[in-house]
Each structure stands twice: as structure tokens, then as C-alpha cells.
Image (cartoon, rainbow, N blue to C red; front, side):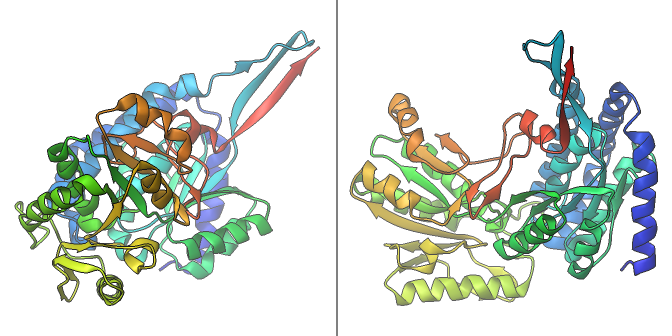
Length: 433
């Protein structure tokens, strides 16, 4: 862990480096991002092994995560020039326009569940815009944090443009209070988000929060059930269910409820649990035993309230078996709470109106999926969804080309796409008379 003196040295370095980095040509910064993508692609196996060892992600999924990080680097390297271009605005001036300037250092407080992706989706747009990055990673993935810093160094980024800070939560306010730090982005729990947003507000620094989720997955009577089930199992069980944007509440129209549940259970039964380093493993351990304990408690309390255990419900230390609960209702933890593990909650709805009403009955607002053959009708219902995303015939996912973020207790602000790079720049008005 960094000492207080060591932390202040890194903050001083960030201040010094920013004065040079912000003035380098955008084309040069884009080339650096292209190089970072190449470093990631060349080191997929090494980086994936660290992800899997530190937090238990199945090795195949860990490789996919690294490749996605290379994609986001390439995406911003290709598009930053257009995204950051000046925007002319017609007024009575001889010329008036918006320009986009870097703001300083951005502090990123990141979680363990996607230890590379969560960092790179912040870092790629932030650094190419001319800012410098400071990473406070989760304590159980410090190995990943060190490797990420090495990626940027190997790619040719100047020392200090991106720094990993092995610190505890008690040092965060000190960092936010520094003049060089002009914004903070956090992906994590509601509690952490609220605390960090309060600290950012205290020092009048911008904040972006991507917090928990309890995504609904609506299946209509006319849906292709084979496709819906295949997507549903992936949407719930990927990363052993440890994802904020995972589908967690499966809201099924009564007409297809029984068939969907039967198909889902049969497919989930076939998922291979085991050592995350094994190529055949699809469900690895949860990242910590307390997370498995919490999930088991949510399962048991839901059963006590009337849910039917259709599959799983077994815990072995950090492992939790793929679990399906049927006849889940709105008063149960499996409906109300975010469940961070391989638990699928099956919920009946008598019609589409009730399905959307149940979907909205959540304090979270990351995303909703709906499966139906009537694409026009589905699009006409988009306004019924208060979440940050609405996916038709697909699982909710992040994509560098699309803005990503939530509403309600899922946070605020947008990452990725043009929106993501503009979150941490000074959109400066220039007026020429």
C-alpha cells in the first residue's frame, strides 16, 4: 500500500505530466491508444490469467474481456478527432463555437468484477482527450491494476499519464481535494457511490457513477423461446452472475411461463462449474466467500416467502451453484434486491402492461431487455422504460459505440461513445466579435 508520502509524490507527478500531455497533438495521443490496443492483443493470455487468478472469472471470459479492452482503445483512437472537434454555433458573432479542452486528472474508483474492462472504458476516452488518469482499484485485483499501468507504459505513454494507486478508501477524499483532480468516476455499490459523490460535491468536482442494477428480462408470448432462453442464460450466468447489467428478474408472460422456465432450467443444468483456469469451466467461484454467503441468504429468504427452488441453491465456500427460483413475487429479496451471483428469478405477468409495471418496480435503472417478434410494438414501448438502456431481442451490454449509464440508484452520467469522452472535458464557448 502507498504511504501518504508516496501518494503525494504520485499526485505531484500527475500535475507535472498533465502540463505536457494536454499540449501534445491529438494525433499523437491517438497513436498511443492504437499502441495500447496492440499491447493488449499481444498479451491476452497473460492478462487473462491474472484476471482469472485474482477474481475467479472463467479463463475464456477473461480473454474476451481483454480483447474488448483492445476494442475500446481502437474505437477512441479512430474517433477521438471527430468527437473532440470544435462545434460551430451560429450567433450574431463573427464566429462562435465550442472547443473541447482537457481538465486535469480524473480519479477512477473501480470494482473487481470486470477488472480490466471497467478501467479501460474510462481510461481510453479520458487519456486521449488529454487528461491524466489515477486508478484506485479494488484491493483484490491489485495485480490487474499494476498490469493495466504497464500496458500504457509499454504502449509508449509518458510515465505518470496513467498511475495505479494501491491505497485504501480512507485516502480517497485527500485525492479528490487536490487541485489537479477535477473529476471522479466510480463503478461500484450504492454506498460507495453515495460516499464518493458527497466528497466530490464537497470539493466541487464533477462525478460520474455507475452503480448497481436489477435488470428485467421480459419475454412475450410471441417470442422465439429458443433464442430467448439461450440469451437469458448467458445474460444471467456470465461472469458467474457477477455483473451489474446482468439480467436478474425474468418477467414472463403467463402463456409462455412454464415452457420458458423448463427450457431455462434444462440449459442451466448443463453449465459446467469448476476451476476457472479450466477451459471447460463456465461457472467459476464468486470473488469472495461473503458474497456467496449473501447470495445464499437472499435465496433462502425468498424461499421462505414462497419462491420455488427449481435448481441449485447449493453453496460450497466461494462456489454457488447455478440457481433458479420460480414463482418469485415483488416482496422477495430475489425481486427487490440486486443479486450478485448465478441466481435467476422467474416472475409471472398476466399481460404486457403488468410486465412493464413489474419491470419498473425497482430502485435501479440500468437496462431492460424484451424478447418479441413484434419489433414495432417493442419500440413503441421504449418510453415505458425509465432505465438507461432498452434492448430488443438482445441482452443488455456495453458497447464502445453506444452511450452507457443508468438512472435512479444505478447512478448518473454516461460512459462510452461520444458522450463518454465529453464527460471529462471543458466544453468551452469561444465568441469572436
